[in-house]
Length: 402
Image (cartoon, helix red, strand yellow):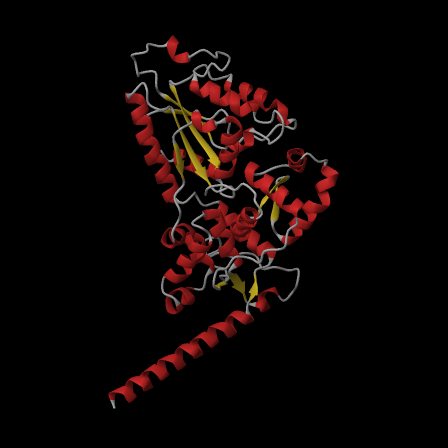
């Protein structure tokens, strides 16, 4: 009798779950992806957010330890390198972290604030020299040990931190294209009374270590931590709560921990990838975009308390479909992942080709969504990074360690 009762309960529960899943599936099928204009508006809202606090606190904590050691020990390393994914905005993360460091025990200078590569990449060494020249504490023209000019037993002079937020913008993969990096590392090693903080992608760092042994000069390296679902939810919540239906958040999934855990897992714990996957998981009522080219303005309650709030819905996060690539495509994408943002001219230079030779290839990759273009520069679309890295590794390309 008890067994019959339990069987009946199981059947009832299974029936309820089946009906609930069918209802959710039917609801999702009735929704459509966001129009580009609306997705771009949401992306702008997210770009206005500060970097995830876990990134910022990690940077400040690691720097505080390293700088204190450097200020108390003449033989301590005078640098710390922060590495991240090639699709992560490492420069912005570093700048955010140091901007919030109100009790920093040092003076922070930024002679190379996300500099753009010069039109002629072979003159990057002069660009770096010119950027360092105004700072007398660096004295870049003096290639002798600058510490010899100071009291060797005094640590009082160790009060300056030099921030290089985006090292990959200081070189190009071509003959003579990384002389600027070699110059920079020599200045750093001869100016131990300054502490050097460097941001770089894993891919660029591995390449530079292969061609000019940067890790022998900047030996202390830290990787940005992975973000879990809880951290992602907390970071994006100021935007999420203004556009996701309150009923869906409270009645369907509560705090939706499974959704955010899945998002973090698929994004490999990288904020920029998570943002893109989240945007692609959003859906909207087709009636709101029935006018074709006319997309609804993003009407957030915080922007217009009296207006009607636009409600969006989330479906299960997933990576976008990955297109087939030929060998030329892989070489092009591999170069972009090593260098970060690049102009079309620099991309062609790094591949040893003329611009006209890669134009049709670039257009094709833009159409597939693998590439994106911002402010005249090309970069890899973050949500494709996970599968692209696997694709390159499977075709014997050297990939990063992130």
